[in-house]
Length: 224
Image (tube, rainbow, N blue to C red; front, side, top):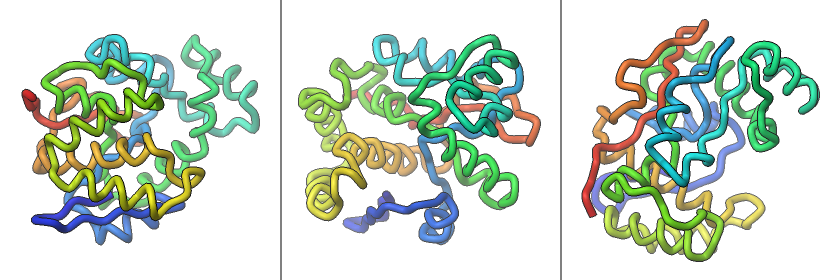
């Protein structure tokens, strides 16, 4: 998802981070909902702080696995590795995106030009910020949750209705779920409002062994 000036916008589905990067040509800043900066022996401060900020929606911030756990061949093995390194297992939701986390981590190690342009964000934290620091009332996969998030996006970008309608008609739900459309759009809106200088959690991020910042970014507060 990309939001340009005026009425310009674009939405598509890409299989890899490399395809997305090349399609953006490259972007001044891109926000992705994939962990960047992986822990070795303890939980990331950014995840812990984001959970506190989101309150009732805090559970949407998954515990990020250590880098070694991404080499596992099975969920059980990944849990065992992470338990040994960090003292906790990983959720099945995290394991389901482990391959994508590994892909982005490896790609960033070999694409230094992208490191300052691709930033980790989280849709729920972006909605929280755009709603004036208020967490969403309803879960995103419910009808009420979709309407709630759609309403916030409409107030922040008048193109929302057109973009969402296009995405619903253009892509199959197995390729792009309804809630994923709003997640992608809120990250694009957040990137646009941030103007290259988003807020970060925490204010001063630690770096992992590969030099990647362990932080989550979000747009400046906007009171609705």
